[in-house]
Image 1 (cartoon, each protein chain N blue to C red):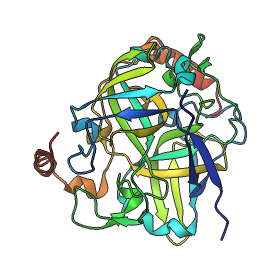
Image 2: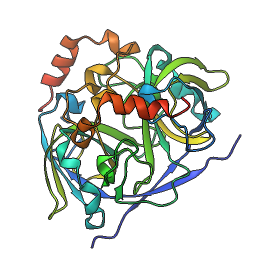
Image 3: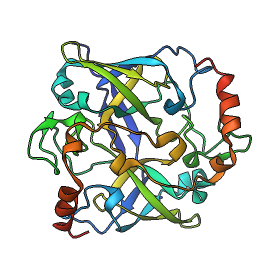
Image 4: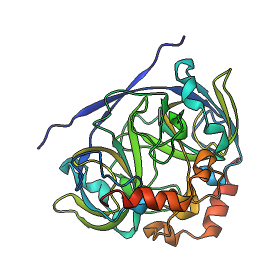
Length: 163
Length: 163
């Protein structure tokens, strides 16, 4: 068995959100109205230039409360165990999360990005920020087990949550 | 200045692609027809269950030839310097790439995922794999400097490339 290679990254900022515990977090940013803020570390401030003209951005971040991983998980929207790579569950071999959120404004003086649609825990460490570009990022796609989860179920599960 | 926190991840596999050098790589997976393969390390094989029913997946990977970072970069599709977080350029504080690629088939015995639409260098280390779900991932969005790059420019720039 090939030995695993390790990669080390630097946290570039932290996301402030209204969510202090896992229960009640919106399951996807696309259905969250919650407001949040990225506090970028000041040494990366210059990298924010031109970002304010985009309406949506990807946040790539660390699931900092995921302390173990599972290869089979029961997704929030399903009752069957699924391979973890066929889900967005946090308990992944590398606990990296991706959310597409709405950019409201950038305060370059304070290195803050104001956002809507956050779906992660407060104080989540940020690894990267990228622009969302429909021309490159929108696909028609088949969605496996998710296609059996109808909109009604999503609405129901969401209405049980606070946001 | 708050001291930076470090995070360490484990490479879970490697992507085989036709691209041995940076010149000629498709600028986005959405406009690449190139075939590739993820060779997943065998210890993660079980995590592939149920993934084969999805037509598109996110690959989250390491830009392994990006040895420095810049906060201002000149994107491939533009002649002006832009903040790195407003681009998809590889020379980022954390050289993490995201591509949405088409899943052709999975060989669970061999831990291989056959793909179309690869846009990264051969032997790129993989950090994570997630399902692409239009219901969560498609947004109407404003695209800042990118909106001034018209389809003609994209086509022209692409036709200069090999794929």
